[in-house]
Image (cartoon, rainbow, N blue to C red; front, side, top):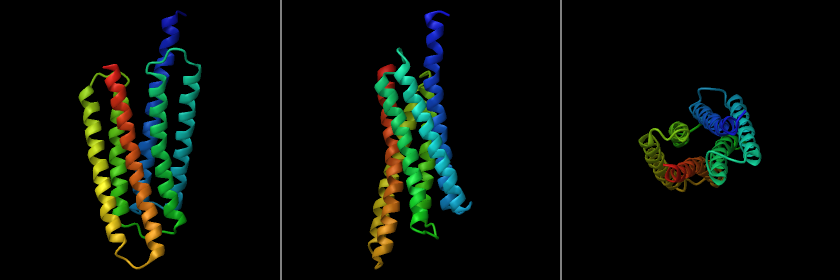
Length: 209
């Protein structure tokens, strides 16, 4: 086997793993949306989200393992590390949000939670498009549009959080304020992490096209 043939599978594995990881993010975001729209049993759905979060950790670990033993990589090692970490962060915040809903004993999922979950899911779908594009960079407009849309969604989440907190502080129940504020901020942080992924993808695109 020549050096070229030996390197190609090593190149391909990073893109394969990134695509597996972003699909896991999409699946977890979909489960979160199901959870807050009460389409499924929340405890069962949380366990499914936790399973996806563990799966994401495993994929991320595989990426770092390959990175540590691969001499020539298709992207800069720092880019690979940043992208893996940023995608894994989204899963962590989705998992944290779902866990808080259960820990705090939330029974009625309000429209704010549902809208946050919808934004996270839409952002994750866009990220799947963007991550798949870095395999070949054949459609840079798709990658650019992904970034624009995720940024737009993140701005929506910022506005939603501001509106939610304004409403929240108008009520007289301190315990409810503490619980819901923590949940809303965790959900909004998930959208921030989606934007972090877009920033990494943008840096990768700039360097390789």
